[in-house]
Image 1 (tube, rainbow over the protein chains, first blue to last red):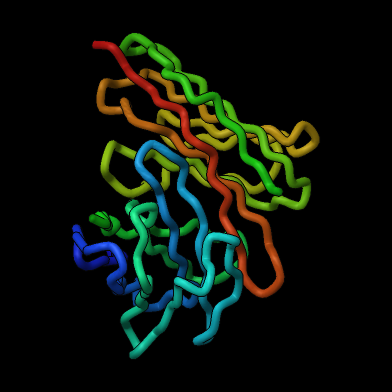
Image 2 (cartoon, one colour):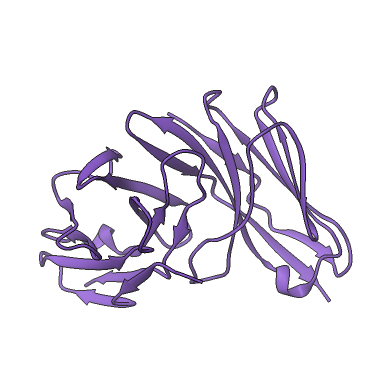
Length: 114
Length: 113
């Protein structure tokens, strides 16, 4: 069964550094998403992406964050000038279409900011 | 602010019993509803989706939706120790050109052998 893949599985970064999290969505899916889950807390929506542009973004997704689809398969989340509070699991998800579709999640990247 | 509320638990049931998980949501414009299972340190895994009022059954799982009451539930029959996990309620609201999922905080379920 096709799946969303994320790399790396664990990223350790010094505070203030930039980090790029990578995702390969399911190949025929059109909508892509990033979520964040701080340890012990709920899954929080960051951003949705369609047709090479951001569709929706939450209040969390400020100027520190950016997303890109640099080629036909990868979908990346860049976090600039990382802060301690950016430590979390970051999940990528995708759907075939926007309406009513359940989202398929990758295994996540655990980001640890030191 | 769109909210999805769940009882955080923990909920403990003996093996073979029925586990009942509940969720309420605040946005009347919500159109699709999902239950995900999340094991510790893992990603959410889709269990059930439901879009219209009533019950939907899939194996040991039954999802129930009542849009008038803004309430969705998940019943797990013949609970197994492997069902022990956190269950996340997710609600989808069409917004502008995309869609957003709002997750509840999850209910921790423990099935006691």
